[in-house]
Length: 233
Image (tube, rainbow, N blue to C red):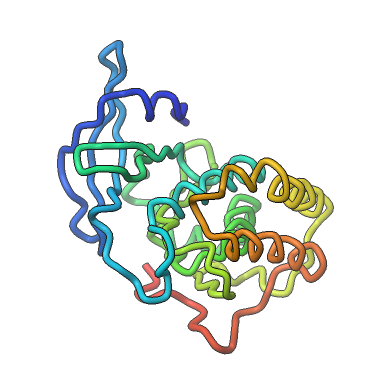
């Protein structure tokens, strides 16, 4: 993965737009002081459409908050991400992950492999309401990354995902220890890092979800909220 310093300090140039995205999602490159360029995705706040159920803050801040939880929580399932200025103003800039076009992401997403389980656990923690198969990024070294984490951290349970194969499962010892450490981080360093990215209510809800996972394991789908995003891919 690229370092955040590479993404933050380099010159950001926009080369095109990903037209399938509902909000402005721009493809570009970041060039460092040595002339080396890295492909990136740039999502400026100015290009976001208002959402009634995510009225607080902005989607770019939630994307960056998701990266921080991924890194400090030991999931390491989000490409390198920074919050910075760009040609269209402040937004999130994320390392572009190239995946093989012939990979069957639906089949991969339906597996019960450890990388998929890691991503599913991460989604519960951040309350991801938009985990589609197309947001799963299998890499060449067998890691599974995820992208598009703007619809996250709502204070209400809004988990909407294609990764329900672990529903009702207990957590293993490693996961329990991992979440225990994450809970301490949320109360300490995480409080300062996430402040300004998500609201106080959302930070409190984040801590409660971690506690619920430790005591109850993977949740079942909500009866009052669609369990799977549409379209699922």
